Amino acid sequence: MVTSDQRRRQLAREKYARQQQRREENRLKAKRRNTVIAASLAVVLAAGGAVYASVALTGPDKGSDNVASDTPTTAAPTPTQSESASPEPKLTVDTKATYAMSLKTDKGDITITMDAAKTPRTVNSFAHLAGKKYFDGTKCHRLTTQGIFVLQCGDPKGDGTGGPGYTIPDENLNALGKAGTDGSVTFPAGTVAMANTGQPGTGGSQFFLVYKDTKLPPTYTPFGKIDAAGLKAVQDVAAAGVEGGATDGAPKKAVTIEKATVAKK
Image 1 (cartoon, rainbow, N blue to C red):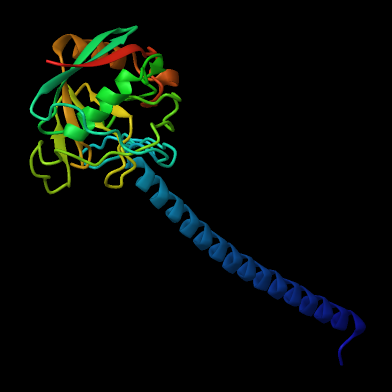
Image 2: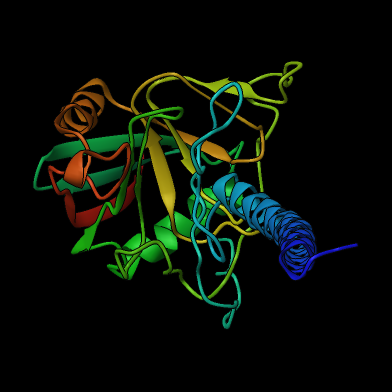
């Protein structure tokens, strides 16, 4: 015969067992819920990473130009200019001539030799903009010191979002050779190339000065070569680094283009 004390102990054990079962069920439910949340978050983060990677490897007008390393980890030169609102300027340069673009900056003069035979519409655009004093008083807004080695200029807004309101086509893309297995070519130190949004034909006014050999996809129009003194000036800016100790951002040694001119050599 079961005594009242034995019955109470049995009921207590059964109650405890039920409580333990409910706790285990709740734990498993919580684990499943957290797994679903984590998986969803991973998908969101992966999508965000894909977007970032896409932006990081794009160039001027509607994006920010980036320069890539063998396996690009730094955004290439990619401006985010406004939509084209005006036509490309009429071609007026001598397409058989060589031109010089002189940038008088507060950190030293930079002379860029441009071959209109190879990049006629790019040279024509720079001649047009310089003639309108478009670059005068503008800052070189971006310096990259890791993965790619460039100083980016040509944005009247100074934040990577400015442009002339029109776009120009890509030119001379085969000038630096055939892309390697990593999809890139070497942009030698001293090269000047157009930034773009990562899409064909999206060059505007932003350009980048390569101060150290840099590997990038052959999708940026190489249109000029910096003189020795100008390259030294850019390298001095690069040696000072990026604001805040970062590797990509506004140069610590700020650079302002005080005057830009383009003339036939």
